[in-house]
Image (cartoon, rainbow, N blue to C red; front, side, top):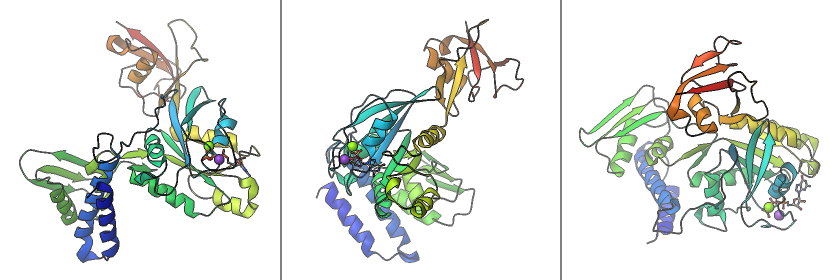
Length: 366
Ligand SMILES: Nc1nc2c(ncn2[C@@H]2O[C@H](COP(=O)(O)OP(=O)(O)OP(=O)(O)O)[C@@H](O)[C@H]2O)c(=O)[nH]1
Ligand SMILES: [K+]
Ligand SMILES: [Mg+2]
């Protein structure tokens, strides 16, 4: 029996099984099995099916944003409107057949926007080019789920299911679980909070299902069984996501207002140029980019060419952004700006110092 059939069998069994206290462990086991088969199906090294590889597009710029949506929602129109790259736009479905990268320049950052083919339901199981599309989404720093405001609400949930199936977790942080494999000593289980959505027995059952008999588990938030399986499998991607409803020129004001009030949601019209600037602003905010200016001794900072980094970046990342020889020869840094304690005077900082937006940094080497 192939992996796809096995997955189907488990899904059927899960659908048949009533959800209650008595079946909880069994369902937990089935979920774990299902997750393992899905992973097999999608990982590049898999022998059991075609590789889950994305489109081969070179990453460029400071961050990558992927456009995911059903056919003809206006993905290519958005790329053509916001970047200097043209991607074919047409009223028929599956106009775009490959990944097309464009660049949005904003606040000194270069954001790569990837136009992708439309996906269909079942994409993650290999329908259409869906598998390739959702695999490419895994490489993004931000996902834009693009939706047609004139179509039913159902589309959003369907797309979420497809992304979930390939291990993408949207707008979610990695569950706070410390998991360590050991060679001996059995299983130590600890939880610092009360677990209301799963329990020790379920987790032990899952560990047994994975033949993990020696490990430490420390749970630090009220997780679900699925969260635990995610951490166990370890290849999950936690990616921020914005829901972008296009074609608001074709719906009523009331409908638009309702959509716009949903969390993480932006309404636009590519055709009428409505709200596109705001979308880019929000993308920038979601990416949590910070720009840092570098300054040579005695010179003014170079304001025309900032280095863009992700939030949480350190002086070491700044060094690597300039040249890879800098960090190994680092002596100290001088910085001025928001993250400097004694601003406006320059502060001496180490490689580990975290930078903030608009900091000015000088690096001194040995
Ligand atoms: N009314 C309206 N139509 C739009 C808007 N944006 C795009 N369209 C139209 O929607 C159709 C599909 O646009 P595309 O950009 O080709 O859509 P796509 O999502 O790239 O489609 P595929 O590549 O086939 O998946 C075209 O006829 C566009 O002119 C909009 O804001 N309002
Ligand atoms: K189209
Ligand atoms: Mg297209």
